[in-house]
Length: 146
Image (cartoon, rainbow, N blue to C red):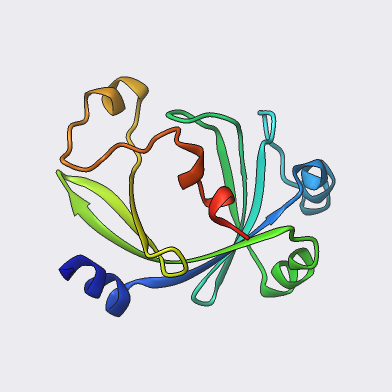
């Protein structure tokens, strides 16, 4: 598969660790972050030499998301709290004038494409030849994590 070869040669390795959401308030208080939604998913992520913390709300087609860059030291400290980890390789490309993120999960030989659109109505009108897996839990990063 041509795309898979491109992902393997040009993609960025991503490691995501999931932390129990019950710790999100305390962790965000320590960092001085403020959110205005009910947290459902807390993760830390390493992409090359960059580190991020992300908090997401519930939802399928529409979710709130808070993401900030953190230091390597903060990442390493938070990693001790992880309950699940997923590894993937990400390649960003343009598709129909939109940014598309291709995530390849070597452990599962699975390739998923994600396109974020500005509104629910635009998402519902978006047409593609790819299978829509929005809302199918088994394909969620957290569910693919071990």
